[in-house]
Length: 357
Ligand SMILES: *Cc1c(COP(=O)(O)O)cnc(C)c1O
Image 1 (cartoon, rainbow, N blue to C red):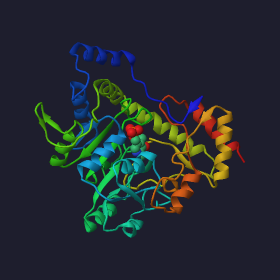
Image 2 (spheres, rainbow, N blue to C red):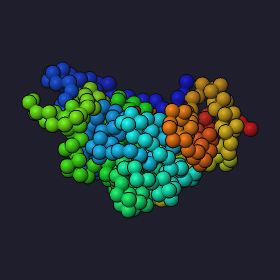
Image 3 (cartoon, rainbow, N blue to C red):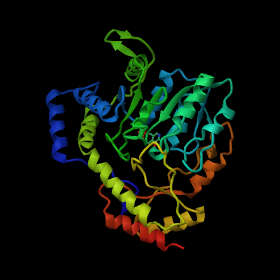
Image 4 (cartoon, helix red, strand yellow):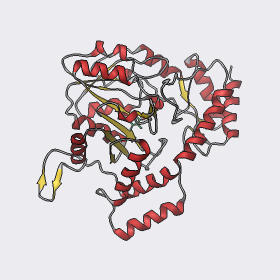
């Protein structure tokens, strides 16, 4: 069976050596040596000022909303993973959607201003499939209306925009290091900011608001990463260049050999694809369903990322109809892409899709 992704497993002996280290120290969590080491290495690898490791990408978002004191309405994209909208609701915030650009699959900055009200406190765009948003246009809108900007950058590990990390844009960016992501720590995530004060506050928020054994300074939660997760991250980070190279090769076979009636996401011209996902766009949902069924018959399981469009969720109080997002969500399919997928297997995917009429 070939699935859309397969968790990258590093050298077992190397991971075992870290586990031995953890057992020797007896320190399993609470800002341990391996968490500190991984934070340092990730900051250097990604080129960011402050990076705080957390338990997962959803908590990274929730901590970001708390750190920035968000209230009321937050303008976000309907074309994303459920966590983008659900974390807002979980924190008592109201998601308001601005539709996407059907070419880039990202929130369309031209549609943001129409959604701003006196209750709006922030904009929450997603760099969908790692493709950088129109960060300058979004910041200009935020500045004009005094709104915070949080990027859900769960897919944007290693993505650069104009030769620097795209994670440096906005007030805060968040990453997910879930086992299915390009870079992973089993479960995990990170909060990124350039602001020293915010970074301090985030460290407080992820550890119950406790500043010393006898001081509780504020409300906080438990969003800490543990040492076993950090150890996995250190091992995977050692192999990241090979992981990226292999993904790029697989994507190339898809791009070159898939039939011409399929189209691709338009990538930001100031950035290079990090190949976190392999999304292809069919001409109709009917064609997509036919291809998906044929692939399944051959034990290949692609995923309909992202379906359904989040503006269709029944539990939302504000009803909206984001036509571009609904249309793209109905026609986009993410094909298998992971380092151990062989060229033969990616060619098989191509052949099956090409054979569907
Ligand atoms: C994976 C993902 C998340 C959630 O991350 P977890 O680590 O699984 O909690 C949030 N947003 C997007 C866009 C994601 O793809």
